[in-house]
Image (cartoon, rainbow, N blue to C red; front, side, top):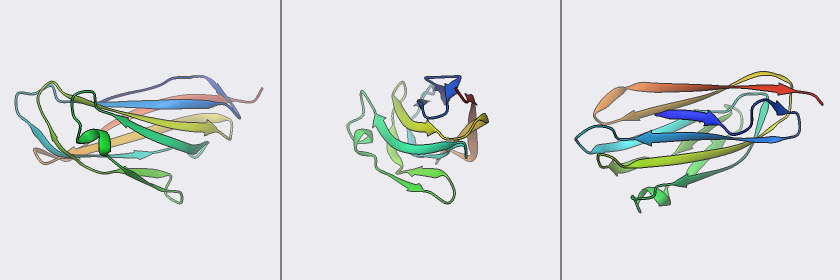
Length: 126
């Protein structure tokens, strides 16, 4: 898993997109990969998109946003063959200055511990 933000630093009132990629670098199919993403409290969730160039099933993934927890829960990827990837794009608007940290967690059947990737964003007032 890898993650980056498209605009950093980011001014209050502006948007950035957190791009999270799950890539199966192994030699076996990954099953039931599930991404959860915690949005920084300095950000407001706008929307999310999922792109899976080779995996039509993954293109239909839906998500639920829990405003109280600042978390997005994506449906599982049923299978992810070796070499395939799924790209999540989470668009947020900066609402408070400071140091923000986006945290993505993934778990799948073949590896039961959470894999974590964090991305920092500096937010400033203009």
